[in-house]
Image 1: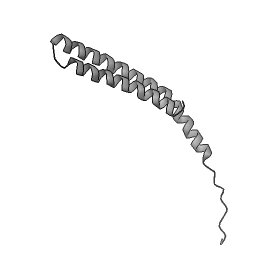
Image 2 (image 1 turned 90 degrees about the vertical axis):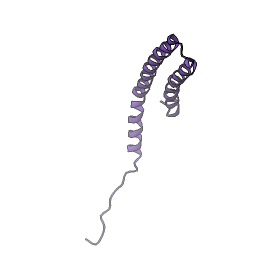
Image 3 (image 1 turned 180 degrees about the vertical axis):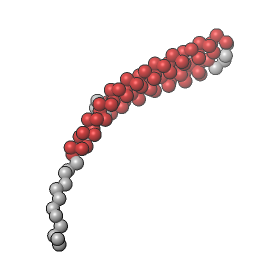
Image 4 (image 1 turned 120 degrees about the vertical axis):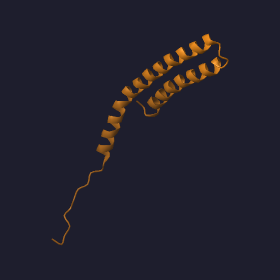
Amino acid sequence: MLTAPETSAQSGAGGISAAASEVKSYFSVGTTLMYAIGAIVGLVGAVKVYNKWNSGDNDTGKVAASWFGSCIFLVVVATVLKGFFGV
């Protein structure tokens, strides 16, 4: 009773590699989702810019640039994350 029982601890490498493979499996779905969101944002932005252009607003160029920039941002983020994590 006075001696402590020996316990064997695992290194944790198995758990880390399992978690890494699980996260990598979600990346393809996540990037596809990012591309889909970018497409929807692009369509909504195109309609908004078209409506502003037809109504003769002066800030049409600024609105077009902001919507285009948001679409490019979503695509770039998805691509950079794929490259960063080596998926």
